[in-house]
Length: 444
Image (cartoon, rainbow, N blue to C red; front, side, top):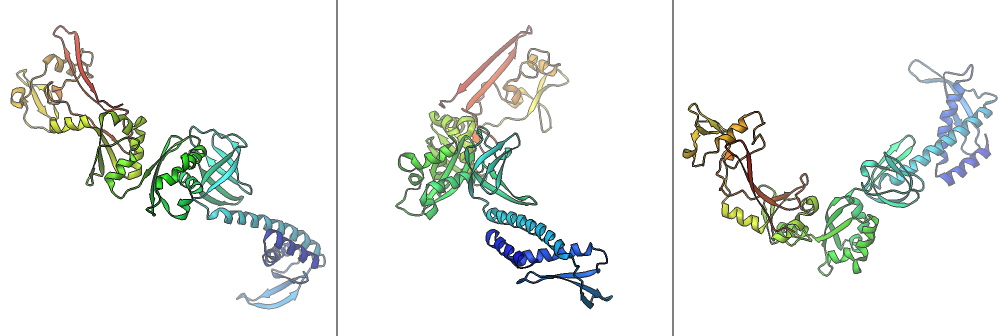
C-alpha cells in the first residue's frame, strides 16, 4: 500500500466524485476489523493511513478501567499489506456503489412535482417500468390511465409523485393520472406560464376522459385562454397528443363565483347562477335544450365544474324552475294508511300521534284493495312494488314535485332530467290496471 494506491484513489475521486478522505476513513475502519480477526491481536486498536505515501500502521492500545489510553505500540502484522490490499479493494468498490446510489437519490430527491420522459421497459399487471437513463421509474397500476396502452420501447412522459430511498438505490414513483401532469405539460408548451404572465388557478381532471383548466392573466394585454390554446390550437394540441386524446377545456378564472361557475360549465350556455353560501350550492339555470350538455355524459361536465370551482353544482332547466316556483314546493306528510278497529281506512302519521281519517286530512282515501294487497305476502296484484300517490299523503291529482339535476364530486348527474308520477290501481276482481304519466324535459 503505497503511492500507487493513493493515485488510484485520486482517480476515483475525479471520476466518481468521492473524496479521498472519505475512502481512507472507510478503509481504516475496515482494516481495524480485519486486524482484530488475526490471532494475538490487541483488544483495542486503530489504523493510521498516511494520506501522502499510503503507508498503513496498526496502533494497538491498552486502556484503563475508565477507558483512557495508558499505553500504545505499533502492532502492524508482517503480512498486513496483503490483507490491506484485499480489504481496500472491497471497501472502495462498496463506497463507490453507495456514492453512486446517493448521487442518484440526490438528483431526484427534490424533483417531486416535476415531469420526466422515459422509455417503457416492462409492463405487467402490477406496474410499468420506465428507463430514465441512470435510474428506473415505477408507474404503479393505480397511477395508470385505464384506457392507455404502454408499448415496450415507446417514450412516455410521467409526473414524479414520490422519491423513496432504499438499500438498492432511489425508487422513483411516477403517475399518469395526477392533475399536475397537465399543469407541467402546459408549462412546457406555454412560455407565458413560465414567465408568470399567465397563471393556472385550478385543475379538475378525470384521467383519460376530460380535464378542465382555469387560467388567469396578470397582464391586461394578454388573453390567458388564447395563450394556452395557441395559434390555431397548436399549443393545446400538443398537450392533448401527449395525453393521448384526452379532452381539455380551458376556461377563464374569475373572482366572481357566479361568473366562474358559469364559465366552468362550458361549452353549455348558462342563463343564471345563484350562489347559496350557507349550503355551498351553486344553483344553475340553463335553457331546456342546454340541460343535457350542461350535465354532460354521465354527469361529467357538471362534476368537473364542481371540482374546479369548489361549489356543489345544482343544474335545473327553465321548465323545472317554473314548476318549482309555481308549485311552491309541496311537502308531503310521512306515514301510512291503516285500518282502525271499525275497519275504516285512516292515516297514521310516521312521527306518531292520533290517526285521522282521509276526510279530516283533506285527502282522497286510497282504494282498500290496494292497501290489502300491500299488507299481504307480496303475491297480490299490487305487491310491495305498487305505490299510489295517495299513499304518500297526496291525492293523485296533486302536483308532482319537480326534480332537479345536481352534481358534485361524489355523485354523477344523469344524462337528462326527468319528472315522473305514477299511479297503480287494482281492479275489484283481482286484475291489474296501471297508468303512468311521464314527462321529459327538453334537454338535448
